[in-house]
Length: 115
Length: 115
Image 1 (cartoon, chains in turn orange, yellow):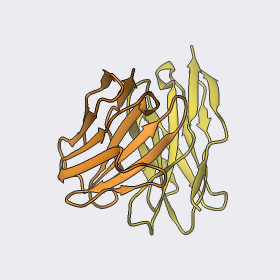
Image 2: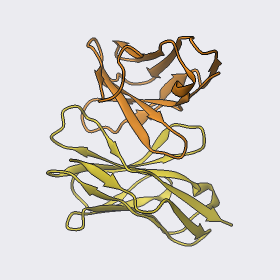
Image 3: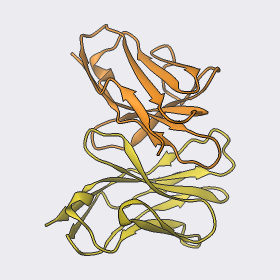
Image 4: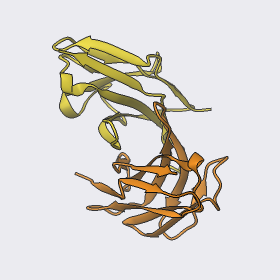
């Protein structure tokens, strides 16, 4: 089946650091990738949608300069949290979509903790 | 506006008993509907989807869901619950006319299956 690999799974870093999270589709080409944020005991909040080779589309209220998204190939998208602060601590999850009516396939998430 | 409601924060059921996790939706036109499961500190795993055709959809791990257009519902069911089914379940909807392929998620329902 379709596998999405997300790396790293856990990051702890100091305030002010920039953190990059990778999302790879291992056995399919992802036309579109999505980045979500999940707070404890809450649902997923869509941050942005990225299509290969074009700029990401950010949801309302998400700072594009804070959360940089790059989708350089059909199998890789990255999310960079720039100058991270404690309030950016969260669980970040990516998903990837094949063509047609296939469902989104999700990575295992990255738990980001900013000290 | 599109929305998904999961009215129960938690569902408790004894092992071996049938389970139902409720989901209702509001979307213009005909939707695509999905169920995902999330285990602690993991991403979402796809369970099943309704695209068209038979209203009863069978998915992974013995789960099934019934699409009811008149009640705008897509409840998740399983005839005999296992302790290992204990997890967080999300219902999601996508508008067929939405070219962004975004999913709208419900708030999630925690299923607890007791031995």
